[in-house]
Length: 113
Length: 117
Image 1: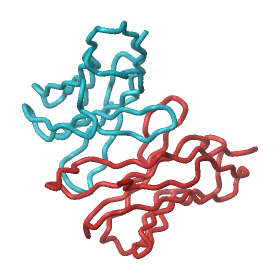
Image 2: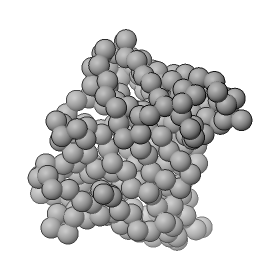
Image 3: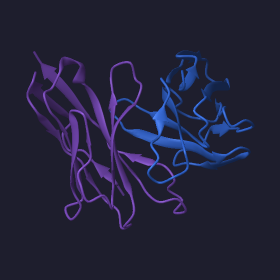
Image 4: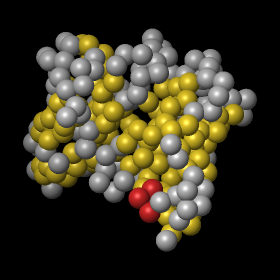
């Protein structure tokens, strides 16, 4: 089946620790995205990548880092510099065109203890 | 500046009835795309329907249709024949052209739809 997978589904982290969220897609999409969702809010863009080995900051990139070494993979690291990391994180992918839809993974819920 | 506005935090609809979820947007571009997503309690965002700014006809996808009024900058989602499985959060989103630095979706705050048996 083609789609986007995110792991783990639930993640707990102690303050001061870095943690990496996985995102893999087998849709052959060039573009990938990371969004953050807080309770009662819409999604906000953290980082996006249009092509391998290239990525750009979104609206709330501070405290996060990404890599895009493979077309299929776009991992997100939540660093200790992120002041309020507890949130729901969604990964998405799309082709490159304006009309192309972003398809989302099932999400990872991160809780900082 | 808020680009997408959804003014209905919650809506109720009787099963088998139609419901309209409101969405207004703000952009100075002529070329843009409008999307609706459904988010059930599991959390995954499910794509429902897309409307391009140059599309003259309203988009339809099964029981979903998009009431696109360009001059009023509104893109309301209409769900016909509501089903219990339609109970979820619904998000309106807008995408602007590549090259503006906004190569992403701007989301509204969502509307929680509850379908009553």
